[in-house]
Each structure stands twice: as structure tokens, then as C-alpha cells.
Length: 207
Picture 1 (spheres, rainbow, N blue to C red):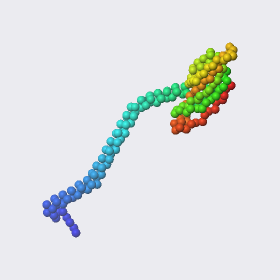
Picture 2 (tube, rainbow, N blue to C red; picture 1 turned 30 degrees about the vertical axis):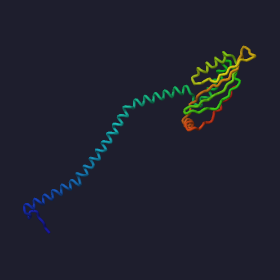
Picture 3 (tube, rainbow, N blue to C red; picture 1 turned 90 degrees about the vertical axis):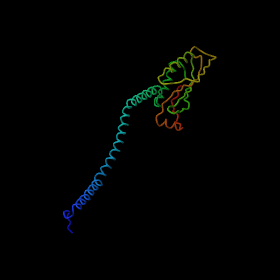
């Protein structure tokens, strides 16, 4: 069947062209315009998300200097704390220094007994019971020198008794507790936080 638009009357030709035009426009809208609009909407949504990410990044960048200052302050505090509280590996040396200071203060250490370690959240307390023999002046010198240690050592439970029979180098006996504080590492601190008790150290005893 051979059809020709030229054989149609003028109004038929116009109608045919109108139908073809509508079909063409419909095909263009369906195959090109609608997908393009969907893609544009998707890109706009992505653009909105990207702008939000960029704004968050800019806000973070503005606060970076503040974060760096806070980190520097925390590091400085940690360094200061580390200077006062030794790590576990340094504690034995600190105890030896106490024995040396006692000897330099002309105190005789009659007993030197490390007590049970008390674990806290971030540090441990190492109490040591001491019994010394000497004079009031020697004892005061010892406590003063211990108080000047860079690392913190607390003297407590001081009990001084005069001797019935004394000489110039030995007029009193005294008992006291010297407590030093030790920073725990992360694993030990975690155990202390959960209630676990790390084993007590075994420093050497002085004579």
C-alpha cells in the first residue's frame, strides 16, 4: 500500500504534520528531555551534599589551629606530669635514690619494706615503710631532701621516738611511709579502670 501526503486534502496534510510533530516532541521529551531533567536533579542533589561537605571542611580547617593549641597544651601537661610521676621502669631507680639520700643524711635504715601497690585510674601508688635511726636533724634533712626530688614522694605516718640511751649520732628512731606515684601505661591503666590489679613490683630492700 503506497501512501502519499500529497494526495491528502490540505487539512489532512496539516493534521498529519501535527500528528508527526506531536509524536516527535513526545519522543524528544521521553528519550532526551526527561532523562536530562532527572540527571540535572541528581547532580543538584550531589552539589548540595558536596557544598555541605565543603562547609564542614572549612569549619574544621578554621578550628584546626584551636585543636593544635589544645593538643600542645595536653602534651605540655603530660610532659609536666611525667616529670613528677615516673614511669614504672624509673621507679626502682627512684627508690635507690631515696636510700642514697638517707645515707647522705646520716640516717641508718633499719628496715625498708615496700608495701602493696595501690592502683588508681591513671597511676599507681607505691608506699614504702621505713624505719630509720639517727637524730632529729638527720631526719629533718632527709625529709627536706626527699621533698626536693623532681619526682613526687610523699612522707606520711611519721612516728618519732626518743632513745633512752642515746649518743651524738643516734638520739631517735622513726618510722614513716614514703609513697611515690607511678604513671601506668595504657594497658595497665585499662586494667585499673576495669578493676584489675596489676602485680606489685619487687624493689630491692635496703639495709
